[in-house]
Image (cartoon, rainbow, N blue to C red; front, side, top):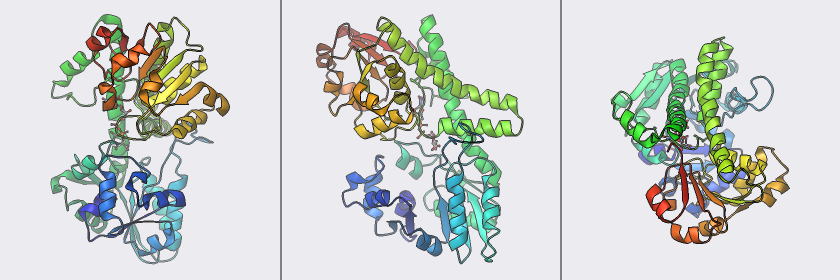
Length: 441
Ligand code: UGA
């Protein structure tokens, strides 16, 4: 919405949320305090806020005044009842639809921005079409394809914008907004269901690439092949392409796992079990990658990490974000904590409290125990001091520039590095005397 506000100064955009503290943070005079860290975002919010971009808790007023409403609430994996652990929880979407239905006095275009299971628009439509107020609603699906860490660039120069809908005028109204800065031939219009399903499919294909290369990384470790070399060799085939082939400790983030689980659930709900099994493997491989990474640490440290200090560098699910949802770090740390390791975490953007909340949310042990076994440091050198091993789990650029000689001097010996991102240079690390393990080598 900030990028739309920037590109369309004549359109007034109001962001509303029930969470007053979050809205207050978005309105904070100090732009360092806005809730999301994303390169370039603070500058845009600074440029547009109180010009044509407003943050408010007055939801009814915003609905009343709007011509177009974007529903952008989260759709987490259900953690209760039918479809638990698989289906998307549409509670918040439905609450939005009901509030819009209740408040609206004139015709509105309602845009699904959240990632939704295919055919959600049908549920939205049935709530909005039965208000009895005579108000007409046109529903559009406009899924978002930005990736965190590169969100602003992705929004300013999207590969494509996708708009699904039934009503020509409503579609055109949204096309006209994006067409201010996106080439018309990159704005695709489809029917509602294709648009909804394309979003899940895009994420499933992307995650599948990561799981595919990660599966090969394990084979590389056994055979003497190097996964980076394999990725380069296959990526030069223009049919495969070079992007998204970086082997890692496992993909994280709020989307891939949730969306694939959702795809699997939908396929099963249509009795398409072979389709469901096929996509479920992407998740199974990702879980395996996180576990085998942690297992390798334990085995290499002479089969026990009990009482040993392991430093984790990076808690965010990827660099240039403070988002930790489904980050591989959480699961690797949890696995090591089950083996009674002492963990010390450093991440340049993730605060200590978030680390503890992430671990507490797994319910693996009492939260006091997490606080006893885990420390979160603001200084990476302190995090690594006296450690038996360092695990690199996020690809933050700054890790490459550390004084690794100094780090090694203050570690227990032998000093191990487990590089889950293939970030460091093996030759340099070995020359410094580290025992260096990297995924897929
Ligand atoms: C992903 C998609 O890339 C976006 O297109 C989509 O809009 C978004 O989900 C969403 O649905 O909201 P995001 O999760 O922000 O974006 O970040 P990605 O760059 O896709 O990375 C996801 C995870 O895969 C990260 O943990 C990353 O480190 C990992 N990854 C990615 C790899 O391990 N290897 C790769 O080659 C690429």
